[in-house]
Length: 246
Image 1 (spheres, one colour):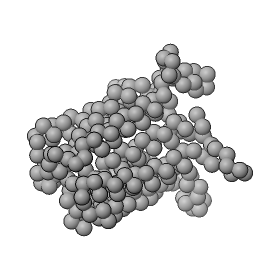
Image 2: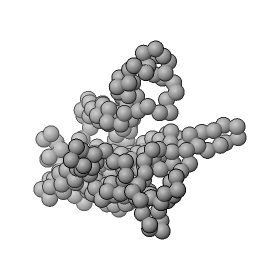
Image 3: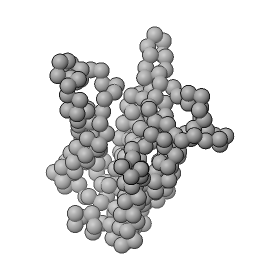
Image 4: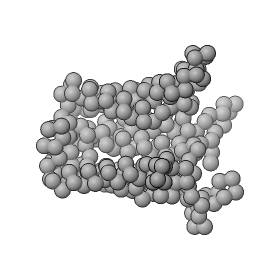
């Protein structure tokens, strides 16, 4: 929709700009969340920063490893330009592992730490959807609804905007549940279940979704599993014990 913006003589791609802004907002929300939950702000911020830095590096290096033939003759291309060429699943896995290692090393309370981290995680996902809307390859299914957007002359569902609304709803529920009146971990489970349930619904309108060989949306399957797991743990009524026992 808006792949670049011009500021004087400079032409700036909007997708990387959105991601950078999202990183700042995510860390800010984690810091505020830690304060609101009366946790060690420096410790929680360190967990989030470690996960983000490791995740970004891992996402880039995973992409390079998967496309090594394109980089073996130009090693400088590994570090520049860096406005494209990231593998999200690699970043998520390594980033989560790094954050978990740091949290265990510093003896952060598991369930309460997740409660403080989840608004930052949701904010990051919101800005990824924004980046996809402004300059990414994503697009929705065709529609005749008045709020559809035109892409290459075809009116489509603004699926990325739907994702943003889902994320904002989850953040509103998280903020409205402060201070928590339930065991540590409940905020994380509640917020995650709302976001994943919303993504389960809106991903049906994504035209370029990842599909299984049977035609099912991969993200919908993951969102369904995540929603059910969170709801089951919430129903058990003691997420603190569940998180600590893991």
